[in-house]
Amino acid sequence: MKKWSIEFKVLAGFAVALAMLAAIGGMAYQSAQGFLQTSHLASRSQETIAALEEIFSLINQAETRQRAYIIIGDDRYLAPRHSSLDRMRVLIGDIRQSTRDNPVQQQAVMKLEHSIESRLKLLDGVLKVRREQGFEQTRLKLIAGDGEREMDTVHNIVLQMEREERAQLERWADASRRGADRMLNIFFLALLSVAAFFGFLFLLISREMTERKRAKENLAQMVDELSAANDELKNFAYVVSHDLKAPLRAIGTLANWLSTDYADKFDDEGREHMRLLVGRVSRMDKLIDGILQYSRIGRVSEALAPVDMGELAHEVLDSLAPPAAIRVTIEDNLPEVMGERTRIQQLLQNLLSNAIKHMGKEQGWIRVSCAPDGEFWRFAVSDNGPGIEARHFDRIFQLFQTLAPRDKVESTGVGLSLVKKIVEMYGGKVWVESRVGEGSTFFFTLPRQLS
Image (cartoon, rainbow, N blue to C red; front, side, top):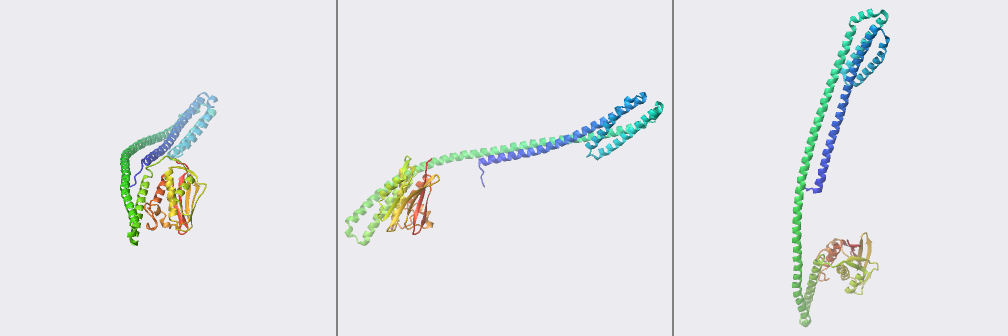
């Protein structure tokens, strides 16, 4: 099962929290939209109720002014009548628009409008009688009671419409309260969910931190144990080298003494055996030296200093003293690098000695060159030797690996491993390009500046 890192858990926690907040925001937006819509509808109902009340008031005012005119006969009491009638028609239009989605109210509006028109016609008839026949005839017409019946009808319709609008207003209020309660419940549950989630995430992170602390303590203990093991290994290497090289020197001295003083006593087979013995003792001595050098890389260090690669390559070449049949060229543009001089010397010495040792031709050449490669210098040691098969490119850099038989070419199999370890210690890399029969080029990189 894949284990998530603490950073991923924290990011996932914030992502989930944001998703929850976004969901809450979406629900809050929907609730707010519903509340606004309900408020708008409630406002429409209130406006409708106010319009109905104003209509009833205007009709009463019209009748009051008409009675005053009938009694006194002064036309000034009829002057505001026309503006009141216009206002009533406007209000009826407003009511019809505000109740457009309520069929019951729409029918009531039609009845109200019809009743008001009927009432106004009666009023107009009374006014005509007053002007043409006088006060007494008008009184008799009023006593008939037609106007009161029409007025009662208008009043009943207005009351019915008001009751409907107030009932509708109450329904909007109930819906708004339910929406608010639902939103509060959702918000409360969401807060509880977020709190529970963060509590769970906190427990996970706390456990992760505890595990990390424990792992760090275990790692520190392992580092201490590894350091102690390295010290023991280092001491062991020195002891083993001393204990092995002392008898090897004695065996080598004895073998040389026997080969010299008793040369006439050995036949050809005996002399061959003595030669092999001396060679194997020498190989063992070199192998021990190579192992010691390999183990010291990275543990024993010297101060970093500028190293002139051209100058150092010439020094190494002089110490190797290649045969006259092998022409070695060291280009003049080799740069200066920062490093441990002894380590860089080991690197060049192993590459050049390998090229010389494995030349296998009467006339050979070796060339050391360099070119910039980004933040590194790319060095190359080329030769026209026998070449290497591609399937051996990785193998030759492994410890104790040789391609030629050891009885044919003396080799410990440590040299290229040393080269690889030294180059990688400086953050570079080493590789080979070769074609069988045409030669090989060993490349290695070193940084232009060491951090």
